[in-house]
Length: 132
Image 1 (cartoon, rainbow, N blue to C red):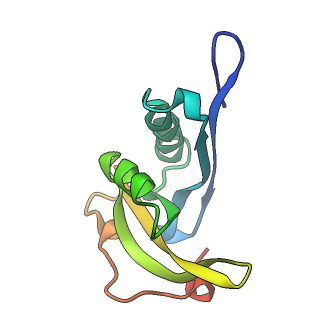
Image 2 (spheres, rainbow, N blue to C red):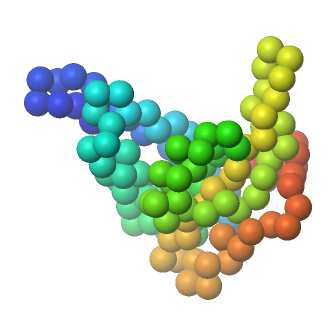
């Protein structure tokens, strides 16, 4: 969690390490920055911390996250951070009678020297087909 000098909560990131073999990776569960602290590179700094931990502490191959297909602002932000769309997950977000696809976005870490973890899949997958 990031706090201001006055101890106001500016934002937070939650993540975990998961997977097996070459699918061992860091996963961004949630990233939130309070509106009054946006456009200050706080999201980038929080992501950098999670990527550093995934790389140095867990020796992961990549970091991934899921984002709504319609969330062009977040997709653009993650793209600027070096993430790319690995695959589409059909109906990942659901509730109250409607569903929306997600993009699984990934960023290769130094352990993945050939960057195999970010080669995009050609076909979408369903949530039940996800590895982790």
